[in-house]
Length: 195
Image 1 (cartoon, one colour):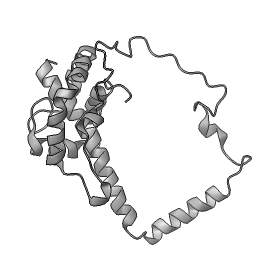
Image 2 (cartoon, rainbow, N blue to C red; image 1 turned 60 degrees about the horizontal axis):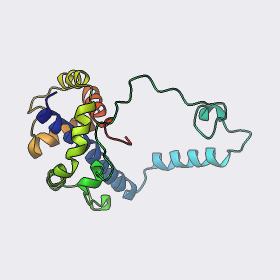
Image 3 (tube, rainbow, N blue to C red; image 1 turned 90 degrees about the vertical axis):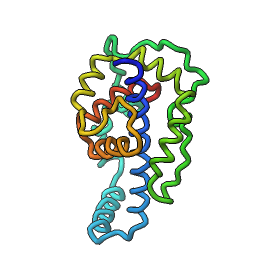
Image 4 (cartoon, one colour; image 1 turned 45 degrees about the horizontal axis):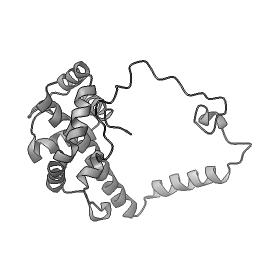
């Protein structure tokens, strides 16, 4: 994938994942504020009964098998060879995507404003340039091109300047959990340290 297209795709993948998370928080807050239905109350009562009845003897410890700190026999699996691309740029002091975007959003006030969020992403682009360059150098471009081809939509491509309407279209597709788009976003976001 050529650099200009990669820049757009990388920014869109990170922005979509973060904004989808913020929107889900806002939806959860609205749902939390709504009075529970009878079915919700019954489910909560049933869960409370199960939790109240837990003790060390009745707990299913096999559920934690392989979880670090809970399974003494678990040993970390060796990383597959070549799975982690070598960093090409010193990113110390370069903010992570969310820190650079620094979008202030209170989920209690409703869903985040997409236009304002995109303006924050545009302002952060220069600060993110070293991360984008590093990600581009380490990316599996064949895998990205294949994922991008599977995600083709009826509007401007994911690797082009989208504008608010185009970005919203892809965001909604991501929230519908379209497999090809999820794979594309994951392929791009795995290049961001800590994700």
